[in-house]
Image (cartoon, rainbow, N blue to C red; front, side, top):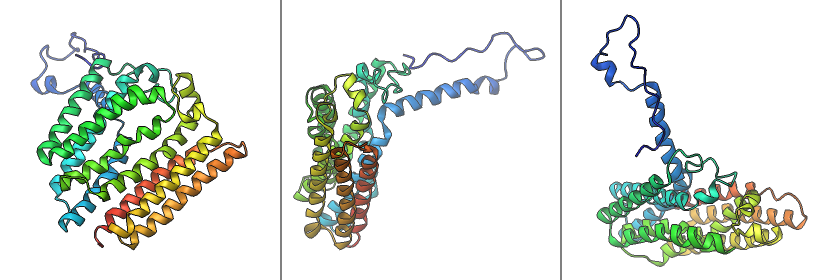
Length: 330
C-alpha cells in the first residue's frame, strides 16, 4: 500500500528531437520528484519514531552498560553488544512512539503541538503506522534476545507494552498522575542496558532507574505547562490542567530533589568523586531551576517552564556522560 500519493507521472509524449525509447540509463534513473517522494516517506516514518526522544533514552542506556561491565566484569562492554543494544533500543523506542502516534491520532490532530505529525497530516495512513510500529517492536525484541539475553529482551517488550497499553491507552487519559506512573517505561532503558551486560538486575541498576524515574515529572510537567491549553482542549488530565500552577511547581521541586538524592545514592557504592561532583553541581542547578519555577508560580508570574525543560535535558545528559567517564576511573 502506498504511503504517500503517487508522484506525478511523466508525460508519455516524447520531447522534440529525442528518441521515442529512452536509453537504459535514463529510464533507470529516478526523477527529482521520485527522490523527493522517497525522502518524504523516510522523513514521515522517522517522525513517527520521535527520534529526539529516542536519543535521550539512549544517552542513559550506554553509560549504564559501561558501569555494569566495569562492576561485574572489570572491563568495558564489547562494542558489538553496545551497538546491538543501541540499535535494538532505538528500534524499540521508535516502535513504542509509532504505536503511540497510532493510538493518539484522534487527539494529535486537535493539538497544536502535535498537529504536524504524519498521521494528522495524512502522510502516513493509520494502518501503515500500526504495522510499522508492530514490525519494529518484533524486530527490536528479537534482536536484543538473539544478541544479549532473555531478561533484556523481556524488559524491552515490557517497556513497549507499558508505554502503549498502560500509559497511552489508560493512564494518559484517566489520571493526573499519568506522568509519574508513566515514568516506568521512560526509565526502563537503563534496566535493559544493564541486564544486557549482566543477565540480571542488581541494586545499582535500580538506583539508575530511580534517577531517571524521578527526573521525568519535572521534565514533562514543564512541557505540559507550556501546552496546557492544548491538553485541556482534548481532555487529557495532565497535572498542569487539573491542578494549580503552584502545585505543579511544588511537586516539580519535590521530584527534582528526589532525583538529586537518587543520583547521590550511587556515589559511595559504585562511582568515584568525579561523578559525585557532577551529580551535586548539575543536580543542584536542576533543583534551583525547579524552585525558580515554583517561586514564579507563587507570585503569579509567568512560569517560564521551558527553562526547566531545557535544563532538565542538559542535566540528564551531563550526569550520564559523567557516569560514562567515571567508569574509566573506578
